[in-house]
Every structure is written in structure tokens, then in C-alpha cells.
Image (cartoon, rainbow, N blue to C red):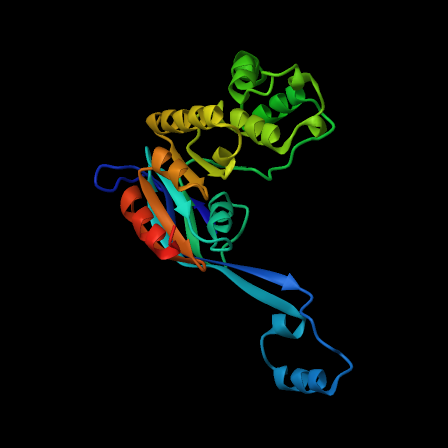
Length: 267
């Protein structure tokens, strides 16, 4: 479960997220079986008295396995690992979107998850989405009005035309991702989690994004970044968590962990 973090300090630093032996298990319906076959019938007999989920044809996927760490204010933490290693799942658990099967997540303040696949209102204009996105983050209409032009300029979507007044369905996936990041970055966050958003856009936008992440850290927030770009991790983060098959393989300074990861992957 996700709980509020009691006020405390560790070594003079203020913790913002504590993951304590977190396990995340997905249950997938529709395990394949040949109901009419003798083999399937025998299998059902053997399974009697076993786990209820298995009897109902539900397959368990153990996505995160006993992960523990403490994050502090002012840190930017990269999450790396192979596809399916549990990075995005862990962020969703920190955000309170996935309940742990076992273990607990404690947070100080409200975590905000920014993902490339976050839902957008495709039939509404970019302008309208800026307003709705800001309200969803707890900003007042006056704050949104004050920061509106900054958000649009940061996203860069108007550099080749007045796209902000067009429906979101007319945007490319990169334009959508840039606008999402720009909306989220307009507010200082207690804990901001970014899932691959810095991988979108051109080099100029990535530099702006990385600079904004550093600003968020300086305002006493904590930033988590999931990225397949080791260079983005190097440019943005001072600490890295390496997940592999749902387990925390290494937690340490960015360069130390990335060197070990690159040796492991051969890249």
C-alpha cells in the first residue's frame, strides 16, 4: 500500500519516497487450456486444492520482486533495465496506481507520474488540454493563465504553426509527449516521475527538458526518470536504480551503475 511518510530525516537529508520490500503481481485472465483433451482433464484433477487463481485460469506475473530503497529531496534518480524489468510498474506503484502484493510504499507529498502513454483528450485543442492538465495537477485557473505562454513556448509545438489551437488528434506522438511534459513541468512537484518523456523531440527540446529537471531538483523536489537513453540518464541523474527481472540489481551513483549495466548489456 502507499502511505504518507512521517516527517523524518536521515543523515540530514529529507526522505520523500521509501519502498519497503515491494512486490507487484499482475493477474492475467485467460490461461490457455484445451478443455476437451484428456491432458487438460488430468491437469484439472491435479490442480484441485491448489491456488484459487490458477483454478480460475488466471496467470500471475511477478513484475516487481522485493524492491527496497529510500529517495531524498533534491535527488534525480534514473531507472534502467531491460524491457519488462519492472521500471514503469515500480513508478506506477509509487504513484499509488498499483497496490503492492506485499510490502509498502511511503511518500512525502503527492507523487505525479508523467508517462508518454498518458491519456489525452484528443478531441480538445492543445490550449484546452493545457487548462485541464493544470487543473488536474492542482493549479488554479489564475496560475494556469500566468504560465500558459511559458508552457506553449517550452513545448515548441507552435514553432511551425498555430498548433496549440488545433485538436490534439492532429498532433504527432512527439508533439503530444512534448506538450505533456511542458504541462507537468510548469509546476514544482514533491515527487515527479517521468517515463521516457525525455526521449521524445529533438536535441533542443531534450536540453530544455533536462535543464527543467535540474530546476525541479533545486526546488527540493525528487525526480525519477525511466529512459532507455543512457546519455539522458547521465545528463540528468545523480543516482541510478538498475532493475532486472523485477529485482533491484544495483543502486548507486550514476556512472558506477551505468558502467556495470553497459558491461552487462554489451553496449
